[in-house]
Image (cartoon, rainbow, N blue to C red; front, side, top):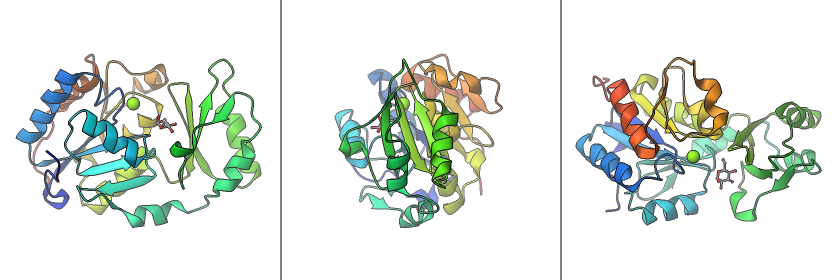
Length: 254
Ligand code: GLC
Ligand code: MG
């Protein structure tokens, strides 16, 4: 079951899905999507998740998902390839720009409604907090505190519960654009699927975005955006609905 499904350089389309509440959540939908991927060898398959690599491998194994061609983990701050889990070092090098992890921790240390997540969720380019939904800090306040320390960071809220602070160049969407460029795939050959805040920037522009029916409210703002399809079906069935909507993959892109 494990192993590279297909060599990334030979694929001419890319399907990238969030894991929790998008890819995973409905076993029959997931099995149908996996079958679809087997029938479409031109489509490389990736996941993009807030989980770290170990947690990613665990949940995929638990649900018998074959190892993806690409794993974008830690909310876009790591790109890992193939069955040998090779890290894209160039991506890591790219993220150092104006990143100061210690400064982020200091700047956001004493904010009511913010509490650091467990140690295993933290990584070199990701500082993650729990948000108290009763008194969530405003994005403006957070940005202000970061800017006071000359930190340019990307602040992402998901499910009104998780807050991730990432290097300014990091996000799931930035990672996908980097990949497409690196592997010579036009963005119109990429389909992404997600359900919550950290998925928002994987969508839109030329990328074909699919938001599954069971999405969280923070994505409502994307409703009128071009190239973002709100599926009615939930979880992996929603991804399949999106695939149909876009008639993905279309023509081969030479
Ligand atoms: C996952 C990660 C967590 C992160 C959240 C939202 O749950 O474990 O650290 O905050 O995704 O991106
Ligand atoms: Mg999710």
